[in-house]
Length: 474
Image (spheres, rainbow, N blue to C red):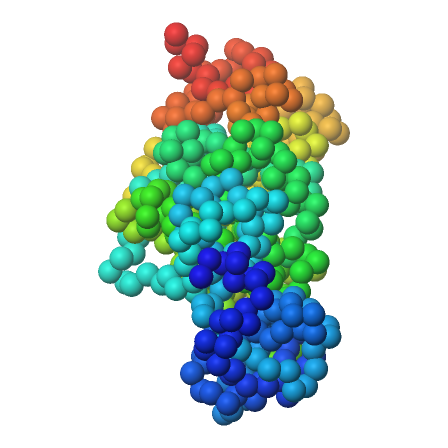
């Protein structure tokens, strides 16, 4: 049955065909308990009852204790009461599994929420179906060069990587996401998936409009479990989004970028469901199945022989506590992190990435090569020394620096400016053509700056450019 129809039509005919499952024996704001007259129902099956006006109210079975099943409501349980008949749906939660996913926005249950309708015969897939076997996973995938200088130099990404994306509002996170989508599509002809988990519906609308304006909407599929939705919707948005990504990876053989904003909200939603089910919480009120729930999601983000899913996962850090149980559990699965910093943005340098807090486990001489590894270490030493010298200069002046510190000071400023970059998706605002910079050019430019080859040029020549040394040689 096509998913949109399943969620909206009166299912009485199907109910009569399949028969009644049982009756509701208790109702809360999020959960109903069902006394089952038939036993052919399992965890994560979808069941429904009919409201007084004939509208179906949908649930997912969360646990079964003997003849009593506890099910979590897709929406609100208002108006339900004891004794109402419950029926088992033909299928579980499904989402479209075809080329039709591109350019559309789905909710956690596979319905389009952008005012469009999919073809009635569109193929669908259960959002829990896919799990890779060990022999399908490829761990030594190619490096995914994004063409963004600061990212490729300090935090290179391998296909199948999981990267944390940390940054508040107004620091350029959306622009960075759009540029990654643009560059990956231009370089690999691969599409992307954005998953909004527990974020403001306004932000989802803003992203949709910006993608439309940047002519990127047909290169992305979106799944949203919005902040105003209940815990069931917020917890299942990731599964819907990953199913969309798996279609692009497995059927289209693409290298897919997945953006999850915010993975921590999934943890919070699962904690709400666990509380409703009367499970004893662990520290900070999290679900006792915290590690399992996170692992189940993260283990679906991998490379295969045919394609890959590479993820950027925004992570909310409660009370700035990096040792929080949920943050720690998520971080165990990450291969690196990209941190956007307001202090960098205030200097007018975009992408506003804090290079000291940004890292990747690919920064290894055996992976990226000895030259790249050494240049990263030299660049970080130079930029770190600059921060120390900046305070000295503010008090004593530039003339009090030694010759070595004087060179370090100005080379660091040039290096900092060099890692700014004009974005393709921001051309209409900046008037500067976007640039995709090859990793070889990045290494040449950084080496030239650190070696003093660029000492004779003004630091402003290096701001918002692409490759420098290659154009200089030309």
